[in-house]
Length: 124
Image (cartoon, rainbow, N blue to C red; front, side, top):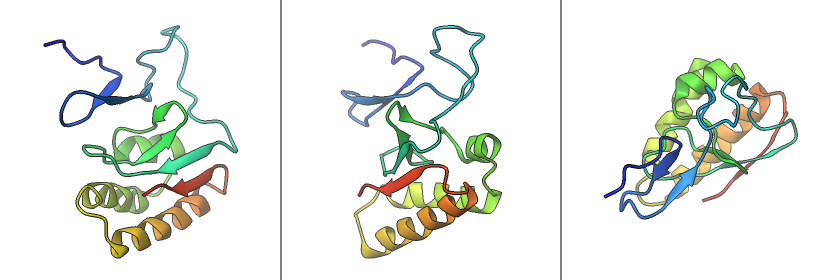
């Protein structure tokens, strides 16, 4: 069996995965290149995925691996980052109206804390 690449988050069956360049620059063409993240106005999907704690996805894939990166890179409050991680873990079970309502609340808070720099949409 092949070793998964470090920039790949595999599905539980190890057959498919999302590709992302993690904050910190792994996978960049130039190792001196700094991570910039999605540009202002970009579409960000708030979408659950098994094994993902911070369910924020850009067109390039998963944006953050953990809540600490979310706080460090986007200056989101620790409380909101913790709530997003909690939702990311809870949403990996069956879909419920409570999960959907909490996603909407978290997106509103995230939009506000990020000063509406991105278009964030929920993708159940």
